[in-house]
Length: 125
Image (cartoon, rainbow, N blue to C red; front, side):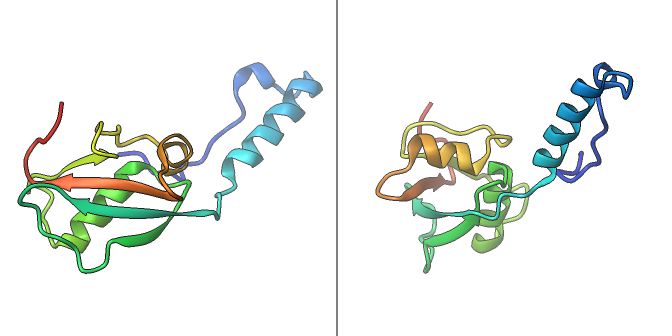
């Protein structure tokens, strides 16, 4: 699996001979490398027979992929990688693991929280 911090290089279309594209590519690369320090509040809610967490509000770095949220939830629940875990946003859909927390928050936040429902069995869709 590729690391989120894997080194990136300047694309071939932005060779140094074309200074305008090269500078633009360098600027984009530097912007990409910067981590967004902003955090969003994620609220976990159990569905069905899933165990209820003692603490269900957490601040999570917005630049994380949703996969990091799933891994965090597994750790908090004490579940192994093979244990069934289904996650949903606002009881509606299951986000892709490569979605960013920031995008999900911007699109689906409720009262300033990103609500992540979790279950041991498929509940919807």
